[in-house]
Image (cartoon, rainbow over all chains, first blue to last red; front, side, top):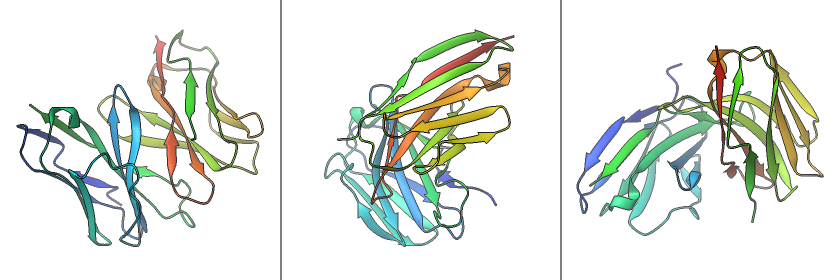
Length: 115
Length: 112
């Protein structure tokens, strides 16, 4: 299996621009998680989906952030408009808790820099 | 609110030493606890998962223990190697959800 795939790996954008991060979970996994990692706050859960439905979005920092999962093999995290404080590494993870040995399989991350 | 803390924040040891990394959590109502490894610029790799009903799990040179009542877990690494150098994170899954709360991490450097 290719693992969790994220794109782009690096994104540099100017303040005020829209940013879209993409994630393809492992085939057959029914949970998908979006995390943000910064030096100051560590790794924070933003939102997670089960069977394409958002279950808990309490970690989404502001209305500028939105996430969608239109089908089982694709999810997006959008920031509009972006701000310098959004600079971080964004990780996507997927799982199939009743079957998988481990519950969280992480992608390589997208490093976002907002200037 | 669940808080997860890891001590020490950084550790540097000579090759061959046995070492212990600590993880503590404030709410014992957890479903499981997982240890991860993160290499610089990479994602997280799962190492060990301990269910709340278990006391420990072992994989090769790694052994993780869980004491839910005291809110503590330890990761024991035997005969450390330079390839073990990485950041180690623990995460607890809160009961009744699939929400994971991550610790602050321990940055380990094993010197050759």
